Length: 195
Ligand SMILES: *[C@@H]1O[C@H](CO)[C@@H](O)[C@H](O)[C@H]1NC(C)=O
Ligand SMILES: *[C@@H]1O[C@H](CO)[C@@H](O)[C@H](O)[C@H]1NC(C)=O
Image 1 (cartoon, helix red, strand yellow):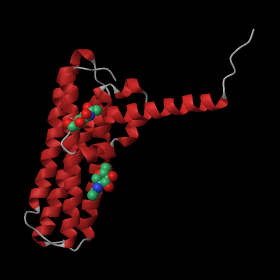
Image 2 (cartoon, protein in one colour):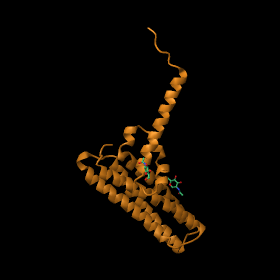
Image 3 (cartoon, rainbow, N blue to C red):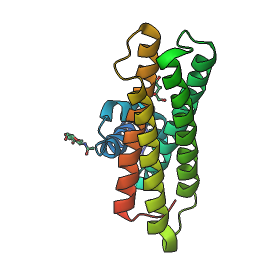
Image 4 (tube, rainbow, N blue to C red):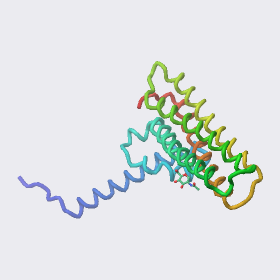
């Protein structure tokens, strides 16, 4: 019995068009998820590495909420360490900027703890307690955002290169946190509790 020969070229075309369409689908999930956030370009950039996983994962709002909180936690932790280093060795030591820096270290310490608790909760969501757990997560991520805003406010109209750099990093962390909060809110209202 004759079987149709499968041309290697056709085979290649089929595989590559399959790859292209699954890449487009991944981008679609990422874009759709980031559409609920305020800082979309940053959202897409920061969550890009989560867009290469299986579609069933990406269809779940929990995937994006957890990813965003994890990325935000890492960044907040890095910024906190950077602030601590600046506080001890920077030119802003002493004076008003120095006090602002010390307050920031504290605020970021709290923010990191709140984000860590949030991530822990998002990793053990259960049907029976979903709403209660999500209300905790929303409270903690909001508190983390408030803490970072408080840090930023501490610098007020302070100018200078070093303070400018600090503010840019802190602002970036607030944007990531704002995005994470939007994705957490989205998960809370979706009711999709599964991991
Ligand atoms: C995201 O929002 C933009 C602008 O509102 C829209 O054009 C686009 O189709 C949306 N993307 C997805 C994947 O929902
Ligand atoms: C903002 O955060 C992202 C995600 O962690 C990071 O890759 C980027 O370097 C940060 N940008 C600034 C200006 O700190």
